[in-house]
Amino acid sequence: DAKTTQPPSMDCAEGRAANLPCNHSTISGNEYVYWYRQIHSQGPQYIIHGLKNNETNEMASLIITEDRKSSTLILPHATLRDTAVYYCIVIGTNAGKSTFGDGTTLTVKP
Amino acid sequence: DVKVTQSSRYLVKRTGEKVFLECVQDMDHENMFWYRQDPGLGLRLIYFSYDVKMKEKGDIPEGYSVSREKKERFSLILESASTNQTSMYLCASSSAQGSQETQYFGPGTRLLVL
Figure (cartoon, rainbow over the protein chains, first blue to last red):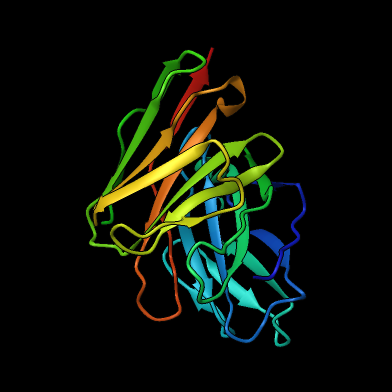
């Protein structure tokens, strides 16, 4: 499975959009981009995933570039409770082959 | 909602003890996983299972074993706990349908080995 690269940390003002980037330049055609987040001392929580089209759900939007080498997770109106570590991972068809890196620590400030 | 539960949130054991960490999921998922999480190292896969009585090694299986006797339950066993196994242990499950694999995680178990 492809590896991903994320910035180690980002800040965002409360109420503003948080845009979290992820590079996955070695992604292959059948691999999905997944986003999870982990609030301190809890297990990771699924946010959203996509293959090549942009996706939106009640939590966030996922924008995937046309060449699929990068993506951006958008939290449209960040709140203090969105402070967490956000993981971008690429998953193919093999169970257990997803790798969580260090993620991006997002701090939402009042 | 998918629910993944882990037997303990916090556990303190002594070096050499045999430790059992239990994980139960209620969504009839085929796949189950055990990870450990350490500062600066992210989540590392220890073992996973894609069916009852089936298991596969992950990236760091040494010092661990697993058991999957029933579909809903996946146990992680530390045969002889050591201090370097002090960590946060996370269990996850996922459905094997199609090519998508959303993993649902439990709350984690913080294990301290003295």
